[in-house]
Length: 283
Image 1 (spheres, one colour):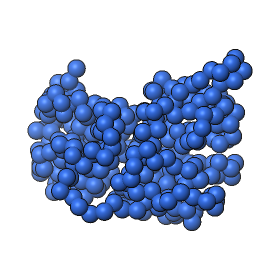
Image 2: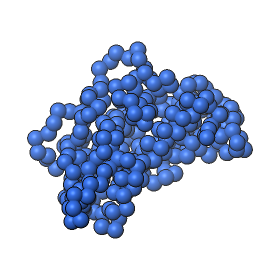
Image 3: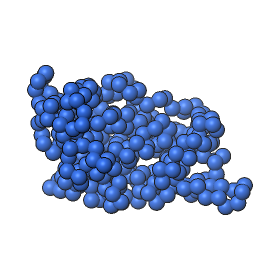
Image 4: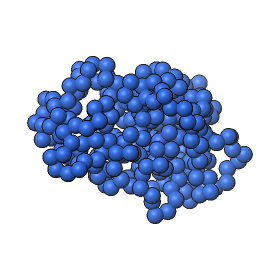
């Protein structure tokens, strides 16, 4: 079923990307996916790595990731059950450093240095607001659009004035610009900067290699020749990890996996804070 008035292929693309973001946005999901990096693990091993979660909180989270097809539960015997990434789950991990790259370039600077995992959680909060993906898609493809025209495209079955709350939120979040009431809307620099991320999410959602993200019909930039930007995971703000892999680059092999210390410590002292609450400012 169409969710917008856009062409069917574009509508389906937006729906897939929205669904992909919905899989990883719920609180703690990204942290659990990262804790599962490496060989399959027992439940007790995962619990140690996310020690701030009680057992009653962790189990439904793992189950939801299994239901989403990102985590696989393997029952070796009745007393030996392990959890690990599915092939789809492992293929999604290289998208996470792209989120950090975008956040470091475009989100407001925090009062104190933030670990990469918090950059991801703050970014996901902004990108999963209702109608956000569809509005950003239209603005990327049509440059400047009036509020009423956006409403007719993005929510054709609703009263056209319903477009303004999500539009105002996108403006407050710094993803969309306008010159004032009654003036058309356009993507901000930060909104345009979502191209590599949305292109990669689209490729992953469609089961294609992330390397093809630059050819996305809306968000791609096949003419770009600049080398990928090195992503640094705030190592100076985290406990010193064991010998680390080479720096992550957004253009590397999509099979690349992360070492957990690149993002957060699993010690009890590193209890994470909640992600940016809905409706808040850009950071």
